[in-house]
Image 1 (cartoon, one colour):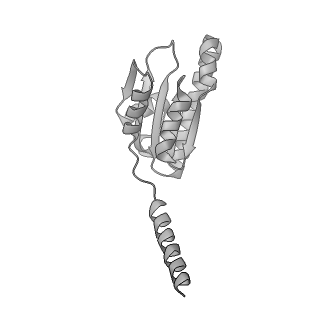
Image 2 (cartoon, rainbow, N blue to C red):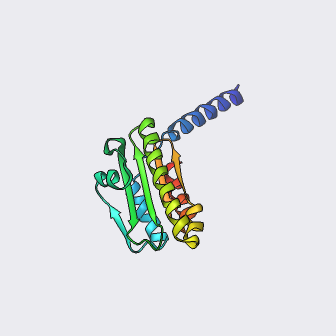
Image 3 (spheres, helix red, strand yellow):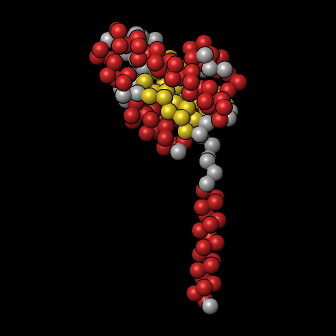
Length: 154
C-alpha cells in the first residue's frame, strides 16, 4: 500500500511539474539580438527601432507585430539582415513569413546576379517560423545566430 501511495504521489508531482513547464516564458527579442551581437561581429549594422520601418523595408503590417528586433546592413558589399518578429497570432505569423520570404528571395536574386561569393552565404540562410515567432537571418553566421534564437523560442 505504501509503495502504491508513493508511486501515486510521484506521478502527481511529475504531472504538476511538467504542466508548469509547458507554458512558454516571455521572450524578449531585443535581448536575443543583443546576445547575437555579443557573440558575432555585427558592427556596421543599423537597428530598426520603429515598427513602421518594418512596413518600409519588408511590407510587414505593423498591426501583425507584437514585438520585434531587427538590424540591417547599409552596405551592398555584404548581405546582412537580422529580423526577429513575434507576431500577434498565427495568421499574422503567416503574413510576416510571406513578407520575409519575399525579401529573402529578393536578396537571393540580387546576389545571384551581383556576387557569386556572397551568394553562398545567402544560400545558407533562411526564413523560419516557430509558432508566432518568425526570423530571417541573412549572415555568414546565420546558423549560430539561429541557434541562439531557438534557445529562447523553442
